Amino acid sequence: MTAARVVRVAMTQTKNAFPDMPTTVADLGRLAGRLEDIRRANVEHHLGLLAAARERGAQAVGLGELFAAPYFALRHDPFWVDLAEDALTGPTVTALRAAARERGLLLVAPIFERDARTGRRFNTAVVIDERGEVLGTYRKTHIPNGSNEQGTFVEASYYERSDGQNHVTAANVSSNPFFPVFQTSLGRIGVAICYDRHFEGVVHTLAREGAELIFSPAITFGAKSRRMWHLEFPVDAARHNVFIAGSNRRGAEPPWNQPFFGESYVAGPNGVLEDQSNRPDLVIADVDLDELRRPDPSGWNLPRDIRHEIYSPRG
Image (spheres, rainbow, N blue to C red):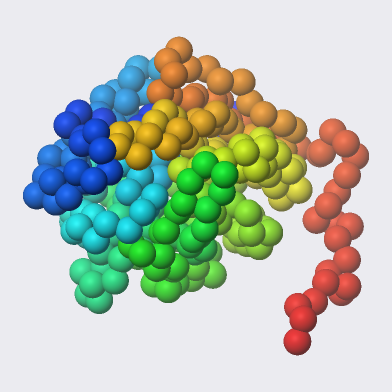
């Protein structure tokens, strides 16, 4: 009899850990020479969360979007671009590779990337296996710029949308260069970062390319975002027969003091999974990947019954 494929998945749900942030936006410039201190404080904070997650039995951990810094894209301050780093050899990934190897964890780590070859910047998730090996990267495909009733976001000031030039290894089983899917010891992993989740083709493509578990790290706020946060993942998980681990930053960060609502969770084809965590900065759920191969309890068979011939792109 084949052993059940139940994976304990954790996500961080926290905020900037650098203690010496200015109290006013006008004073942000004084951080320009302290970016390494900011990075170091946040990486150390998250290393502690990895240890706590492992103590709770986690096997895979998804860190938050741009976790090594405050969410700086609330306004345009050019000095933040110097925080971007190499996705394979930079200080953040180097520390996480060691932690993954030490604790036997699969990690999905979204960082601010600077491409070493071109100098271009991306919002990039790095997938690291339990041996500390980088399986590949995913560059955020859709980049938002706008405002809502709470604040403004200007992400295009800092990084661009994916060029499809993700770093991949033989672990990638996807034929789509924009949406890699990584075969890991725990299952097939895909990534969709924040704004990506709103686009109907993203989860569809990841599922078609074989993803079983999709990590969707986000930094999001506002009334509509909060409402949709609890609708999109369960619908996509049911429609595409996958599990989706959606994580959001939690709390407010000086000096902007924009509140992030958190409310991270894991959804599967049959609903939202119970949180097994005992602390507010971690969400933990047991994902039964064998559920994806069982008959749907509704009696539906969407892959069999879809009418491909009636769906076609506009010319």
